Image (tube, rainbow, N blue to C red):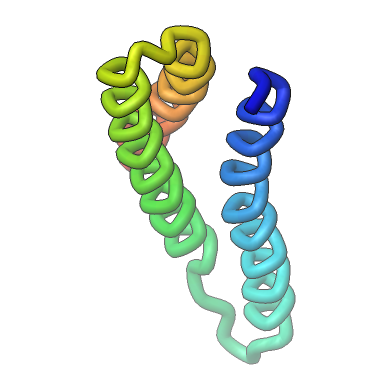
Length: 97
């Protein structure tokens, strides 16, 4: 596969869980607004987003190790970019907790 296909595949792997999280959070916020006594949905959504990012981070680290062992350096560089983005996001959310 070409580098473009690997990049598109990785973007899809990241976009699908984040899009699912966004849709679920909108549903949860709407249901929370309709309650007589609203609760704190934002904290649950932040924890869920952090868990999603941690799982994606671990998956990309494992893929980075596999690609490095197989001497696929350019694909490993793509993984490294995603790992850096996830690390910054995860550290930001952990600092908020």
